Every structure is written in structure tokens, then in C-alpha cells.
Amino acid sequence: MPKKITIGLICGGTSGEHEVSLVSAYNIQAALDREKYEVLLIAIDKNGKWFLGNSPEFLENTDDVRRVTFRKNLPTTFPQTGSTGGDKPAATEQYGSDLAQVDVFFPITHGKLGEDGALQGLLELLGKPYVGADVYGSAICMDKDVTKRLLQHRGIPVARYKLLRNPQELPFENAVRELGETLFVKPCREGSSLGVSKVRTAEEYAEALQKAFSADRKVLVEEAISGREIECSVLGNDSPEAAPVLGEIVPLREFYSYEAKYVDDDGAELIIPAEIDPEVSQQIRKVAVDAFLLTECRGMARVDFFLRSDNTFILNEINTLPGFTKISMFPKLWDASGLAYPKLLDRLIELALE
Image (cartoon, rainbow, N blue to C red; front, side):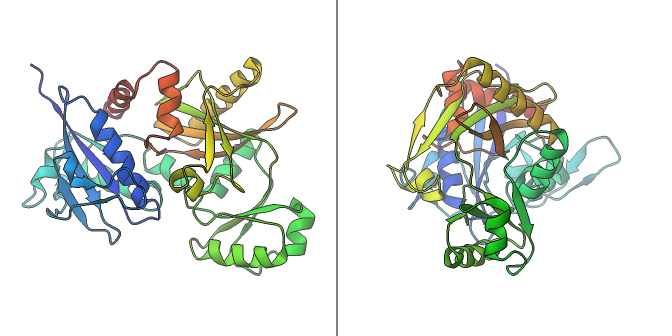
């Protein structure tokens, strides 16, 4: 019988997406084939401390993103790594021996320090393969401004926006004149719509800027796009492919906020497959793959679009570590395309080992 592959499933983290990450990790560990894999759960608390668990009971209250947590009963440190003169870095640890046994890390740490290249850089130093984008791709896609500039250079349409580095840089009247009467204000490097506000008045604008700048030193003020929210799942490394089935998010609130995504059961409706003209669907899938390669993604990404009534579309953002909760679109779209959740995980691990 072949030796099982040990998966180090990293979850939690210090970002505002901590709880979503824990729920995603619970779903992933439940779907991993135990005939093929040993699973080591590695949770990071909100202060950045690391803890180990080797059973599903390590994660608690996983049916409620507001209450999910984990047991802090086995703290850990990372193994010391370094070159021994050969081609492979060797773990020469006194501590972290459990982590040294990991064959492939699977980070599902959404947001800052987990999805922006920081954690990926640490895993590179360990000399271990890991699922998902590398340092470069993670950093690019986490920064909405850098992503948009790359896409614009390639001719891929994006929403009009202004980049701010201080709250006084763009008065409300100027923003409206340049971008329209309805605006979105976003931290440049956050996920799951954290810190995002939809504004129509000067008072709302001032509050939104304060909120966004409390999350990041770079803020986007963006035009509001009238259109359907379409999502596309991409899988692969140097020869990626887009899932044949696209999905649509229909927000039932003001916009698809963090609460609508994960807390409010009536926050949005997911439509799979999205009802789109086949030719337009093919165009969206092609642009998603082009954007995946342009931004140096690897492994997986969920690429989000707005589709206008005239069938033109803009690319909204690229998520290199999409959610794996029970309502997450990335695995749902692959499942609807014929690649079931456990097989999707197999493929992601294979891609990490390429």
C-alpha cells in the first residue's frame, strides 16, 4: 500500500476572515480521502500563535461562522530549516517535529498575512510544497490596485477607480464628478468585502474613508457597476482551465458584503449554472484564464466579473484562496462541472507537487 501523503492544513490567521478560514478548513479535512492522506490541522489564532490538532474535534462550532473556534491545547513552533549543502532544504528542528513530517501544506488562510504572500514566503523558507499561488501571485492579487493596473495594461476591462493614500486626497465632489453618483470605497488589500462601503452622500463617503483607512493605508474609490455578479473557477498551474459552469451571485441586500456572504442566511442567492449566452460565457472563461496567468496565479483562483445588460463585462477581482465553506462558489462550480469536492482537493494537491 502506498505511503499516505501528510497534509498540513493551515487555517485561522490574524485577519478579519479568521472564522471563515476555520469553516473552510473543517470542510476540507472532512472531504480529504483518508485512504490517501494523513491530515494535520494547524490553526493560527488572532494573535498569530500556532496550534496543532489531528482530529476534526479540534475545530468547534463549525456550523456557525460567528461562533467557530478551535482548541488551543497543543501549541507549536516551526522547524528550523536551512541548506545542508544539497539541493533540498533540510529540517534540523528541535521543535516543530510534527510540522517537519508534512509533505504538502494546504493554506486556507484568507486575508492579510495568509493570502498576501507572507505565509507563502514562510512555506518557501521551509522548502515544502504548498497548495495555491506562490509569494508573487499572492501579493499581486491581494493588492486590488496592482491587479487592476496589470489587467488594464493587458486590455482587460476593469471598473474606473482612484487610488488614495490619505483621506483628504479626493473630495467627495471630485469623486462623484469623475466616477459617478454611487461609489464603492474599499481597502486595497482586504478580502471578503471587509471594510467595503457603498456610498451616495458626502457624509457616507467620509465614514467609508475612515473605515477603509483603518484597514489599509491604500484605499480604492471605485465606480459602482450596474450588472450581474458572475464568478468563474480556475484550476491549474502553467496550463490552467476554467470550469465550464459559471455561477451568479444575486445579493439580497445593498451589496454582497461579508455579512451577506457568511452570516446572513438570506444575504444572497447563488445560481448555478448562471444563465448566460454561451458565447459570452466562453469569453468570460477565456479572460479568467488570461488574468490567472497574467497575475502569476498557481493552483486555483476564483475570478469575479460584472456582466452588464449589453453582455459586456468587467473583471472585478481575483481571489487566490477562495472560500471552501458549504456555500462557497469555487468548489460548487467545479462540482457542477463534474469534478467532485474530494477529487478537486486531490487535483489541488497534485498541482502543489508539480
